[in-house]
Length: 271
Ligand SMILES: Cc1ncc(C[n+]2csc(CCOP(=O)(O)OP(=O)(O)O)c2C)c(N)n1
Ligand code: SF4
Image (cartoon, rainbow, N blue to C red; front, side):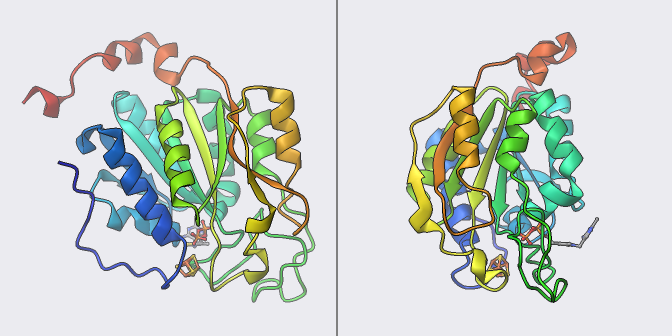
């Protein structure tokens, strides 16, 4: 029986949408009917990274910016594992940006769940690459001068095989999106729009702009969908769902050594 609960005290702020992401991940894993021992996780550093303490799954709590390469390392060791990496927008789009880009190229069969609150929240709200222009914080008292960048467009330009976006306030939509991401053969990137209730409040409550799309496999349509939200404004539209999906060889399918491991049993399975 799946038992994902741990005894760790949950220290997120009351009402933080991270609570809902945790619930959606638990329900996704339970509904998948995959043995929980088949899963392994990595988390980055930040509020989102506390997922590590609250999920009864094997894994590695990584250095800031390193949840993705560590997860790819797990896939090299055992390509049969269902690996989930959890990262924040600060972690993956700033410290770990090189890993984010290259992960699409390797196409390891794993899922990145990216909690985007447009802020480095654990360290009290410094601006990240997706913070809106003009964001005033203790670290940017005159307001951020730079425009945010668009990670969905970057993922498309990096040959991503699965890009999705969901909303941390919508548990059923998260479960359906995470389930499709886990089922995808390759690197699946799911951006979760996650309000932070303490820092960068201006970026919150974008729900009115959100709408749900049908799963899309057309690159030109994906580019248009990516352009609809620039992380900067409260206008425009925010598409939720599978923005792009294509079938390419995964990392393990590309390398004979890994291919061989794909069908072999791991040590704990043989016991
Ligand atoms: C290399 C490195 N740089 C900076 C830090 C300090 N640090 C720890 S958590 C954090 C903020 C994390 O922000 P984000 O990844 O967006 O996650 P959130 O807290 O918003 O969930 C920072 C800057 C660190 N631990 N290591
Ligand atoms: S600071 Fe923000 S992201 Fe962190 S737990 Fe509190 S509400 Fe959540």
